[in-house]
Length: 473
Image (cartoon, rainbow, N blue to C red; front, side):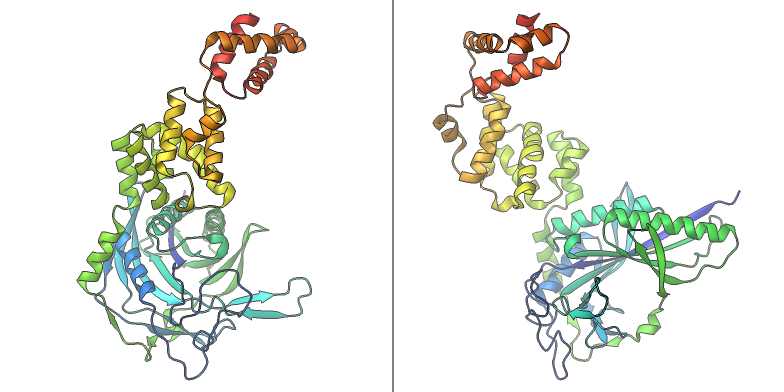
């Protein structure tokens, strides 16, 4: 039976986290009214001259270093010529011969995926279609000229699942280093894929197909899985494979032909005459290296070894640099890494997601969280109260101890006092008592809830449950 091998390469476009565009001073803010963040430069009007964004170039260097690339000492911008309505100059300023970074890698699943190149370019405008009537199309040039970085992998990826895993790790690395927010919903991270399938024993690669219009990592996996199966079926039936670009149809879960695939010479690359080559000196590289600090994969391993955290916990805590820093600052105040990690994951991150707040703007500083976790561990308050205190501190910014004292939330530890509350609850809920004795064990949960309510959540629910079981049995 014939054995086939899948080979995948990715082209990942990342919007850089700058305040202004790549070659002009227009704002990059997302979601503004169409064509309100434009100027003669990003509209490609005659006589305008581009000026390169230094911050964008530094972010490109940062990403290249993080991806273990060789940073080129001298880089040039080129014109990539093609006609499309959203490209006002009929060429895109990009890089080709001398990109900012080459020959890097990103390790996933203990295997290095090669990074062929990292290069800088400007984004295009955005076509807007009237989908209801279909009578008009418009162009929003707010996106035109936004700084982009394209990361091109070697054809080292061997499955759709591995492609998804690579993108997850890449997103984590890029957002961790502050190069981009990698918000796929806003188009800050976009991915095209090249896929080919060949007989395993063949040396020559198969005909490649480019896949576009994949708006999530799951879409990338599904689109590549579909293409893998489609191309394999063609090979099995000895039918030709066309080198083309295909679009992923999320609704139908299929790819559809878009156009035949262009070659590099079709773009007529040549040096951009309005921009001088730029040199990157070793001092700049060393400064950016020191600013990056410990990369997420290394920090994740350290968290596992130094703090005895699980692979999952370490991965979540190092998903963003600010979260990892917050965790390490918290355990300086309360040296119980596992407990702190649990509270950050279950309460802090959930609260940030719910309120769309970032951890650097969170009113619960590391010392406050450490105090709350410590009070719960020492049975000064129970976990239910601890969760409420976190929310209250988040809203008010008050000290946790002050809130506990002000609201008289200190946990009741006197067993006699707890039993008195339980006796009142049992007397007031005879039906629930009978239900429990009749074998309806869920009634116990109801009774625990009633005790918690009567005590204003000032008792430990596990102690309440234990006492209730003794009394009812």
